[in-house]
Length: 313
Image 1 (cartoon, one colour):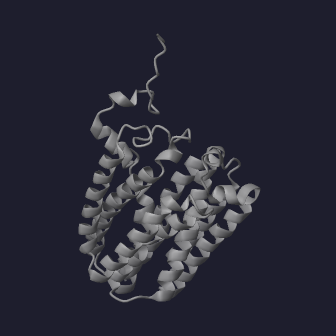
Image 2: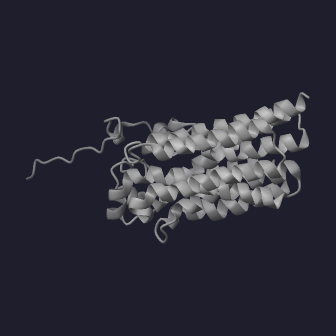
Image 3: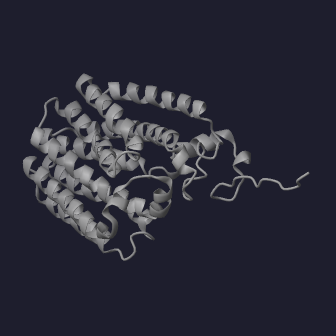
């Protein structure tokens, strides 16, 4: 009789997954242990849309504050749902990638049926919050949720551009908030910003995906990181420049002031340049990805400075 024992699967902290409390496994499944990372990339398009609308409509500060809190809660729940759905779809891929093999579903610590129930609970909560934004915003949000959000994890199987699906998913909060606050569309502005945020997402998520290139090849996962190959830096510079250009164009359409152009547009341009000039994109992929969440503060700072200057005149 063999005396060989199977070693327990360990989490990243070296603790056997079988000994981790259930609540902590679900907490990790939603990535709430990393909050606000991830969530904030969904939140910023909502906040930018709200602040641009406030500048245009001269909304009172208390309205901005109340709605910002509501959008942050909604984006947290939405990001939770996205992570759960992603891990359900990617469980077989995740088992083959060193960075993701200890995720709760991939490791077997949480079963797929339990994860589906957890996902449904998040969807119900998100739809309830989304309904508060008004009928038009609710419809726009639902369309985005069941297209970009649903398709993104599956897109890794059939296209080299999954980051494009993620880009529209991240950007979709902008039109939802715009129609909720303004009640009417500014098609040029909304389209420009959605395309710009999508380009920004392709930029930072491709850099993030560089960390998993070798494992992704073995697992059969498609990504822009593999598609761009050795030309990743010059190609990403095009997406970065496009993002900055759309910010400038949106500012022109919204009649933004000097603070916006100096802080938001100029600051974003310098930040993107720093990212592209970082020597080792693979080794620094995680750091650069996180820095894009911080970049959102820079974009918002210019918007808020313009708003404050305008309402205090």
